[in-house]
Image (cartoon, rainbow, N blue to C red; front, side, top):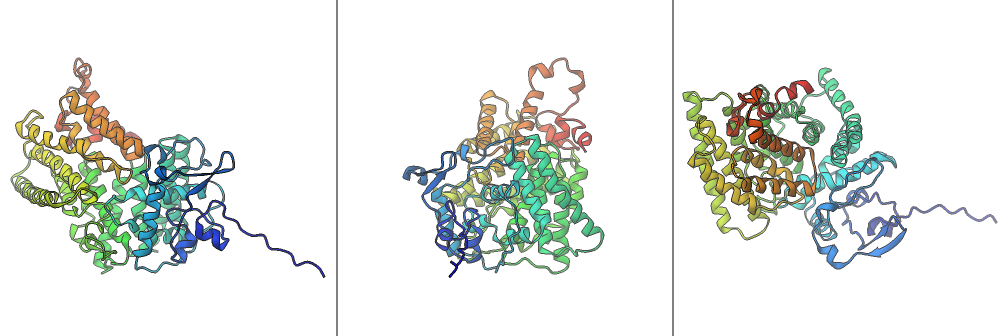
Length: 520
């Protein structure tokens, strides 16, 4: 009798414990692989790992397992796409996140349809995107299930145009301004832009599709991840604004079961507030004309994890949605200076709003214990103080950095710059306040503090936003150097100090005239 042929077994020597027990091939996505997510199981990882260089196994020490991830482990520049990257999250954080996912699984039911990402660069890029890029886009105080993006990956697996944007973002983040990676990122990204533009032109979308909201939101992330000084971020923010407006008109209300609805709204407000300072009044008004803030009503109150605190349900803005709305409106107000009577009255109202927000945050800081909530309040105060400097300059355009009010608020803001710690999660959150402060500082000690904080951000990840802010800050100080100020006739009329913030064409044009128009 012929022997029955044996079926080859799929082994997962480096996979999670669940896949090993089931003898399934694990895709090794962390914090939870697709197999465990599909069956809603806790994804547990072993405390030993394979050393790929020597084929040996070694035990990870207890101290390294419990220690926070070092900046060096977060991202490594490489010259070829086929090189793997190190996971961002440490073992202790992975275990904590997995337990939290099991306890607080999102209410939305998700059916997974994994596409074949291949064995080459696509699989590695998606691994980096899901384990390094996305988790760092959520603040530390937020509910851990936010960082799993379960309601986002489904659309990526179902729609290649969305998956391509994911892969393009990962290529930019891994490459760290490497030209080869930028080319690969563009190869993924451009077809998705063309596809959605064609769908809109042909009337195949009505503006309320969930996949379209995900796609445009991540197109914004792609543009912010680019290393060029200028990008199409305002164009895509305008598209996102239009989507929120259409969804409001067609009564496509935010869904409490979808965490991404809260993420999309807060990411929109954050990027709109912090990027507008770089661009012209024409670009800013182009976005403002696409929506009203009432279009986002409800999105900023989505509570996908009702058992958690309100702060834990605010993944990016730490319950400071009104603050970022005010920052954007002040930026719009800053371009037609000096202000008209009606605009000045509006500025006075913004000042009152800032005072109320500062009072609320300060009271919360007095009662909060040390930890995530305390940190979020301190960063909020930094934003408030920097916005006060900005608004004072808008209301008093002839005032210089030596004005007593500016120097007083600046000293307070620098205290929080020194106090606030930089983490891998949302480290680019420091870019906007440090850029504004760079226009106001005078002493070398103050400049060194800002340089040190930017260096801390680069230690975690040298993203496009951090690279861009570093270039702008260096240009601000180089432009004000004694050598540059003496005998250079073509720059004598250029705005300097805080005057740059009032430049009609934006901060980039104030420092690099015609740079954006040439690149476009």
